[in-house]
Length: 224
Image 1 (cartoon, rainbow, N blue to C red):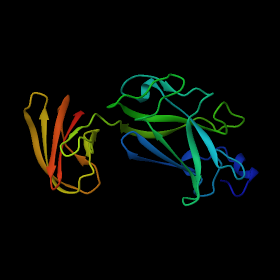
Image 2 (image 1 turned 90 degrees about the vertical axis):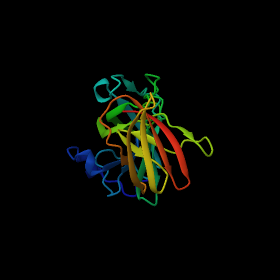
Image 3 (image 1 turned 120 degrees about the vertical axis):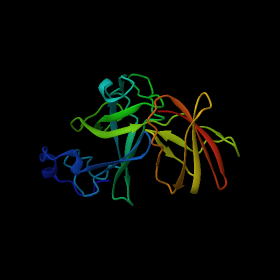
Image 4 (image 1 turned 120 degrees about the horizontal axis):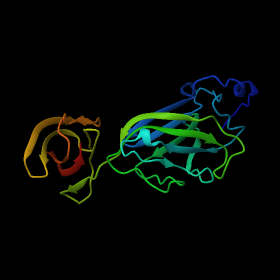
């Protein structure tokens, strides 16, 4: 929540949004937005002691691999930016894996690559009495694909997006990639340390990757 209101900040309209807003893709299809950490509110001034404001979002047909339009109704903007006292900034999340766009009434399908998401900051969920100019947050990011079959408990722990394996497994693991006919496409060893593992798969289609190692046995279905 703003601690100091400055009219001068509102006049600096030419400052790029990136100077005040930082974004991070924390996992496939998930954007974390942080705004005002440098006490710079020239893109959008929420006002004094305001704990929450809203983010109107959309994705154009040109900015996603499905060629579909996604947009929120101006009267129902569901993404919020909330004051985080630890970060000293407003923080919000746009999770495209779960978000329903309230105007087009659709969701982004798994496996879709999104190049960028349009945004407008606004003071109200239903309409606005003040708002920022149009801007965007940049990808690309590919939404999570269907993950199946954790042999131990039936719960998927891993996923593949944009040709990279995201897994909660730790340590040395063996990876075997199969096509849907059961043919082995490639095998590799990797050190799972929390970072995505590039499968370096050039073929296009549907595949399975078997993950095995110390205390892990899992099969993940994915599209490449």
